[in-house]
Image (cartoon, rainbow, N blue to C red; front, side, top):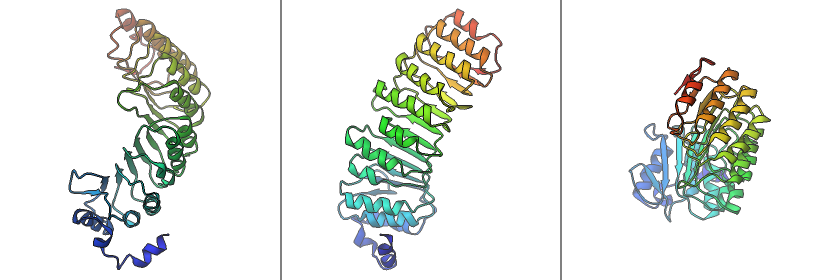
Length: 316
């Protein structure tokens, strides 16, 4: 497809492929690899001068082509794309040739064109959309083509996890939740599979996900049968984890020796949970940082247990 654009690239007039002078100016900077333009925002309403406002009259095939040839862009923020599948396919076909963009953020964009997403050189993706039904499959299909991805932030489902486990370089996952929604049992089961199969995973961020004891126990099952999070970070802060869930986690980590950093601040556990963590410190020599501030049910009994000099970990 790109050979068609190559033949016309030197003669095409930007005013013929853009809807307004604003977009024309942005496209000119993209075409010429302006070093002052390292981040590109695509929206449907204007906010700042350097944004490309997608409207009727903008040829997204040409936009994707010039992005693909650009050498200075580092980040791409896609907050709007039209429902025209042909235009979106041409856009992604061009963008996939770009080797300078390493971070992509997709927000508030949901339609079947997600299946043609193809970003093989991107190392970080944030996908802040709550997908349902067939759209989950569309996104999961596109995600499989992001073969250089190291960091993913977004929704997790069984389909998305299947795609993530095929990515050979994935190291960091952050579970994004919309509007304070608590993580579901189905999502926890998907996380269990991710932990069991993504053996290079080093960083799992579940902060503020609404995680409770039953969901944490599912995660523990995944940790128990894999090498994921070895010498890594597990962030469980700002959740609703109680003594029972924490006891299960501590028991698993004590026997496996995994995790270098464990964040447990602002949960719902008390002395029994903290005593389990104290036992973890006695047996897990890999743990170097632990935080548990903001758990108001903890008394002097729990503090006394955790204060014993079992482990040289830094405690907050």
